[in-house]
Amino acid sequence: MSSSVQNPDLRLAELTPMTPVVSEKELLDRMPWLPCTLSVDVPIVRFTIGDLLSLALGSIVETACHQTSDVPLRINQLLVGWSEFEVIGDRLAVRITDQA
Image 1: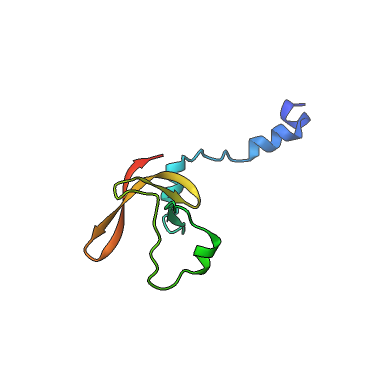
Image 2 (image 1 turned 90 degrees about the vertical axis):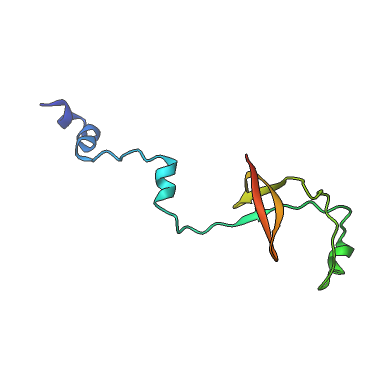
């Protein structure tokens, strides 16, 4: 009797095709349509619940960032890098300055 017949697990392994190893980049390249959430965290100084409740259209909130400060850039709550704000025409943009 052969060893593959004596060991049913071995026989099953012989019949099951090997799953190819796929790199993370290849996996991501297959799913460019997959949605994700990108967020930029802006620290706010001395902000209270009272300040939150009094927010209205046109309110101005002071941040702890200087104009040239790097702010954290997150995708699905995972830190992926640092960025800075830029004004392009009449739009506010984020320039990626460093990867995490």
